[in-house]
Length: 456
Figure 1: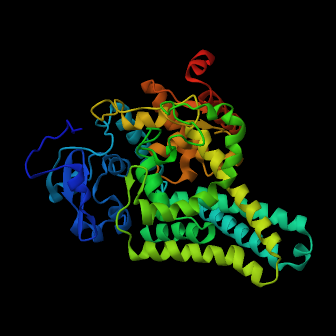
Figure 2: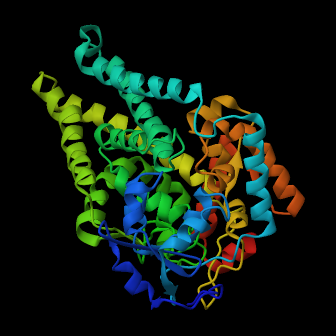
Figure 3: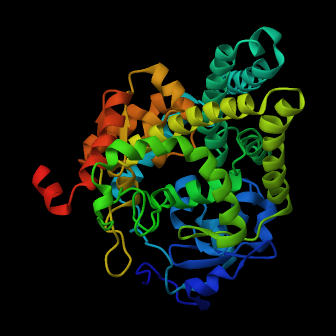
């Protein structure tokens, strides 16, 4: 597949395979809209830190670049690093930003300029972080160190549930915010917040960056490109319309949700496989790992095992109780994360775009983010807080760099712009209705294709 937007044919011509070789700190190239840039000497000067550019090196970053920058503004800087053109593409590509896309960005940018609100900061961010860390540490301590609690298993179970919910909240807030650089403008803050996911949850911030920022957010609901939709052939569940049907999927809506409780355990082992054996997360390639991320990755795994398992055993807690409480916390965390994630995209109402034979998605990227996403419960501040603002998912997908604590402010702007341009905005009134739509999706895709067609 080739970009049709290439206007400058000077310089070297690169295939995507050749571009992929330039993915190291001392040899870093990226492509934007069919043009290739050598950013090696810019990495240390990048206002957003070196981390994101080291992950971006060796790939087409058009959509990520246009998402995190004002359209057209950084082009002057990029011109200095031009070295050639990209002749083929590894993954699907999108047309130039449409009028809808430009109007959406302009409307939201104007809102923040007029109100003089910092889009990456608010007092509520730090209050919520403090509550999450405090609940996590307090719940863990209470399970094994408070005499009144450790004498009563039912109280320990309550604190295990509390711990699991706090771990899920860390993923929905600190991890998620850090991976989108939406809290402060300081790259060091993002690194530290991301690292707490490794240490407290035992799962990799680095793997999440590749999966979420470079995969899911760019290729939302595009089969074989969105790492959130990875399936084997055959798989435990059928979640994509173009996925082959097997009889095992009949009534999958009755048993698949039970497996969501193992999400956290699956991810911890999958991280190792992705980074050190497979070398990619679905179609998203992994670049050479820096010393910082290596230390955080393995340090986090070791610390997690020590604080969640070894320390409780060493202070005298029985093995059965330690593993019971561990399992309860993990199941709570897994279910909360799995169900809130699935309710946004893996539902029957939204679209499942596929590239044409030339690898093009025939839809503007911002419009695709809206029509592949389901929002819910915007009127509930409580739901917004406990799902990490995932109920404003369409808003988040277009503006991931803006703090989730401002979504309730810009949500109406996004909805109005969609209404103005005739872009359908999928919405459910409650969280439960959103989860129900996921269960319905599983049920329908579990049917034989001909029966599915009849049920619609």
